[in-house]
Structures are given as structure tokens and as C-alpha cells.
Length: 369
Image (cartoon, rainbow, N blue to C red; front, side, top):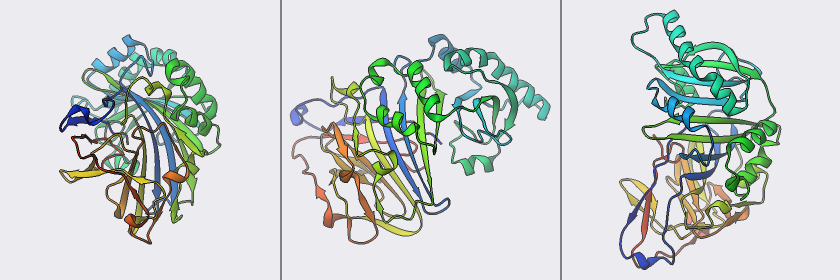
């Protein structure tokens, strides 16, 4: 399930607390690791490039507007997942998800109206995505399917119907490179960052990718995501996030070099456990934070480090902020589960005495629903 990030920068005092003023870009790069000890016993690592600007993740403006203005369309997805929906095997898919029209009575009416909506856009989508997808079926999502897929409803869920178009399966490395070349702006592709790591990750055999478009009121949320799965790897007592991305260093994109964008590059780790556990033995820094409305937020976005919220229980979430740093290495991101208290090994960043900037996160994957 995908969540939308809205970051609110709130000035709490004097502007001269920082040498440079914090800003927010429409482009966001995130690296996420999910350690699932509770159900699948696997680790899932993904890198997502996200934007609300069609100049950064490029699709034709006319097509984006037409899809966004169709009140029935909830999302568009292209993916090479092995089973994009039930009944589709070993085929890549373009999926147009629509909200069920209450005037459609019976399965035949639902299927016909959903296919009619999808058929309006599939030719233009094929041209924009560089695909040749043909109609396969209409899939009616159930509430149970929504829960099992951990979806919000924007992608799939109750009252969501999918027009499914299929094409020949494509290796992730080839599909990601082709998609990036045609859809990611040169200024982003040429500036490394998480994109470069994602490109390398996509070459691994255990990876899949997806492009998604979620229409909103005045713009669309565009995402390109590559995901690697590591079955049976969830029982490690020491978590090294970059190990799952096949790199010893994670640099921020040079696309952000012209201004101070501290919240546009984020590393996130989620641990789900059947038993109580806790964060311990952090190798790097803990970012200074405060609790607002029950959620920890950074109080100095120029400081790098982890914010764990919560840091104990059956579900642990950690977000690493770069602050003014341009890169983070493997050792700085490592931490343990269980054992000594979190504070014993942590290097705690100093809290600015002057006014600071706070950030409130509302992102699926960044905030529990």
C-alpha cells in the first residue's frame, strides 16, 4: 500500500537558527526496509522515486490531466510482479483501478463499465510507458484482498475494480532501465543518489518493479519503485539496511544540491515481530526530536540521525534523516534488536537552543494507520 507524504515545515522561532533555510522539493527519494518476523519471515527492501511534477517523472501532460479528471480512476499501475492480480501468472501488467459505480448492477455490468474506462486510456498509456499491453480481464477486489495486500484503497480494496492489461514478462533490470530512461528527468538520472542504487538493485534476480500514478485534486502522485525480497532473512538480531540494497554507501541525489532539502531523502526501517522487542546498539546518531500529538518529529532538520517511533513493541519504525549530510555509510545505519537500552550506544545530536523547524510526517509507510 502506498501512502502520500505531506511534510509540513513549521517555523518555531528566529530564522537565523540555520545557515540555510530548509525547503521542500516535489521530488522525494526513499529507501525502505521491512523486516517481517510476524508472518512471512522475509526482508523486503525497496527504493522509491516519487514526485508530483510531470517534469520530474515524465508522462504526457494531456494524458495525466485526462486520467486525473476522470472521477472513477483511483490509480494506474505498471508492474512485472509475478501475479499482479489473481489469475495472471508470469506476465507483466498495466492495471487501471477504478471505483465501482453504484449504478452498475451485477458482475457483467461492472466488468463492461470497467473495461470501457480502461480502454479509453490503454493506448495512450502504452505509448507513455513504452509497453504493448493487451486486455486480459476485469478483477473485482474484495475487502480481504485489500487487507492481505496491505493496501489503502488507492491501489486496491473494497469497491475497487481493476481493468487488467498484460504483456510479456520483462526482467526487472531491463524494465527499470527502460522506464527510467524515458520517464525520469535527465537532471535526476544524471545526479546519482538513490536512483543509482535502485538501478544497481534492479539487476538482482530477486527484484521486481512498479510504476504507479495516483490522481489527486490538482496533480498526480507519480512513483517508480524497485523492490528486492529476501526470504528467511527476518531473524537477524542486527539490522544493516544497506546490506539489502547491495551497497556500502547511500548518497543523496545531487538534484538537491542547489538548496537545503533535508526531508526529501529518507531511509525507513519497519520491524514487525510476534513478540515484544526493542531497538538497541545503534551505531550512528539519533536525531533530536520531540513528541507532538503522540508522534516524534525532528526539532532540528539540519541534524542527521535516526528517529525511532516507536522504539519498542511488536512494531518498530525508524526514519533516518540526512540533515546536512550528503551521504551515509553502511555502519552508520546499523542497529540491533533486543539487548541493551537504545541510549547506551547512541550518539545523541545536540538540540539547538534557538528556534528550530519541525516536520510532521503523514506517509503510508512512515506513519502507522
